[in-house]
Image (cartoon, rainbow, N blue to C red):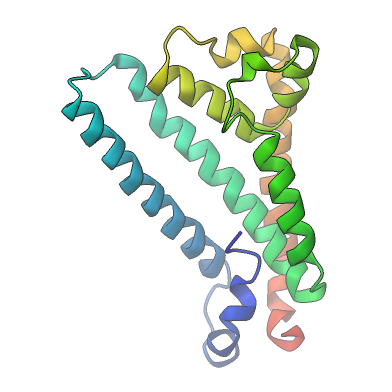
Length: 184
């Protein structure tokens, strides 16, 4: 969410100093990633205080966090250059973010949704990551991503959305960032 306005907020820096513009959304995503890792550290402290022993399945977390960070970076690059051109992007994104929040199994377990709807929810890359994180960190008896999504071919949809978002964000950012200073 912070990436949407990051170029506008850095307008004076963009106008005065020549540097790779990509550093701005990358720094926003990296800052959020560090906050997430500190919160995760607090979770591990509480796990230790409760006497929970480390599990081998926790080793999935770095890969899942990387997938989440890449998706956030792709969305951030895309939204930041779109916001420079179209200021209506921010309120539209806030609504889309609410839909994305409730469409992802953050507050609920995926299995409470009707079975026909579960696979549709898993087209969302964030839902896939959260389902696997829940299985790895919280409840090993909960269905993992591969059980929930059905066949491995169904993973192509969220993977395609992830890669497409990252590729489109990178392409548009590279194309539009050069002229961003004039549009700000």
